[in-house]
Image (tube, rainbow over all chains, first blue to last red):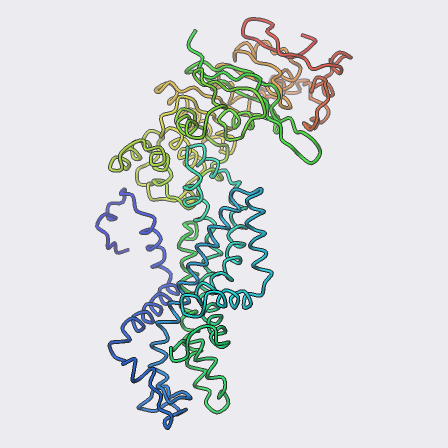
Length: 294
Length: 315
């Protein structure tokens, strides 16, 4: 196997955890395909301003030209307000990916920490934290998100906060249950005997062993989050109208789904491709993080 | 007579269970001298592992004291305890459970060095290599993961981790019982070599009498949380006084043709529950010498000859 890092060439040299994971991930074709597709989507999203003019192509309405099927001029057609669907999808990637990724990562981080702490310390702290999570779970997540937005106001940041809040309890529950099964393993006791601090035990021993099921859940979550954000936009609580966002475009398109299905199909394909690539990557990452599955 | 390193006085550990208090370790006292090995034997569930863990404060005690070089370990604050952990280490029973499967050998051995700031970052690799060499792990294994190694090599990782902080005292909690017989000898020899070279003090917990005989200076026999007999190795094997010790020694298989068909005293009955024990000799229900006295009070550990302690009314 080719080694990019000269430091890793000597066989007895200690390799870092990240290098090890990357080496294992490289062997997984599906994961690499997922990574490739995801990177392509990201590059397109990032470089969008280079080949699309936001004001004239994405926002400006052109009513006489509305709902045109795909043509040479508009490869993916135009929407109900005569705007180019492809330009809007490409710009939409910037917003949807931001919402999906940042929300999933922050929900995972906060939920994961709450779950890990609750599972690790147990007892009263566990009871208190998990009852709070139960309260959140008992509210329908859409209602919870609406309540958050109602108090914070609409806008992309607030949407992300609202959706993240409703996803935190799920991640907390998943992590807590994995942590509970790991907490009493002898290697945790061994780490403690060696003088390791609680913080390091959680970060170095518990989370790496508990993360597997959550990573897959989180990559699937990115898609769900994009859809949730779209649902909020649909209710008029999320993305403000001219802004292109995949979920929002999907819900706009469903008004004319019979006559012009492409208005639903293309945004749907975008969400699906993103979620699929992330899911393949997540699956591979879970395996790569586990040295036993080499 | 050399210096006393560890002194344990009236140590108790009770667990609360649904059915009452479980007396896992009940009023155990012993001392270990520097550079010596105390073997702790007893059947499963007699509290030997709990004793080891409470001594190292991996479990909080119920009552009693553990003095390491005169300082009470059980009264230390969290930060003092952190310092103390460098002095007292443990080698675990099951090398398949006691090392994190997600860390490479190098990381596993480097961890205690990093956590305790034992050496500079730049020296860690060299130190890890040195430790691996000491415990007999080939250097090429540094990037391997535990699942790629056999039990003996895994146990060597556990030993290297314990050694890395330069402890004085090591609790060995059945370190060879999960290993093949052929590997047991290697690990035991490694531990003995280390003791000779570095003057370690061991508390060696095992249910295997021949292993304990091989490695110990003194032997302590436990039954249901109590010490029933404690004596220097030779004395204990020559002159076992407690009926339980006698039964244990009887049970060692003798690989001799002439002892075929030998009559043995096989212990009858079941071990009693350690939950809410009555005030009686805990061995009374299985003991053929048991008298009325044994069922009315708990015998104290007393010295019958110099260094030989036994807790039995009939001795």
